[in-house]
Image (cartoon, rainbow, N blue to C red):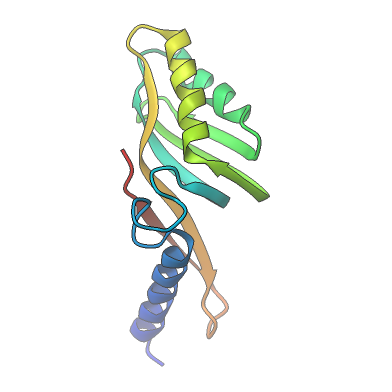
Length: 142
């Protein structure tokens, strides 16, 4: 089988897995409405407005206090927030937004830590090669 076919099969697998996790969109999948529940996995999103050097630390502390969140990293220059939901846990999107709104309110100065540009990092294994395939799947959410 050609490498091109293997890659296409792998990418199709990622699309199928992403569709199984989130469906067409959070507003159309039954049970998720506007508040998707994030299952275990690695995620990234963009914080709306970081205004000082302490913002990254405030986001890490706020999200780290949410039950089910394992790790949180924030790139202060780009505003990209990476986080992991623990194995066997699930976290409601609204829970993240609530703690981030409170944290940005405490920071003041126009800080807004609400998340957008949400992505889930998917990985799967190609059955024929045994190699991991990684991709990102977007969840359009305000």
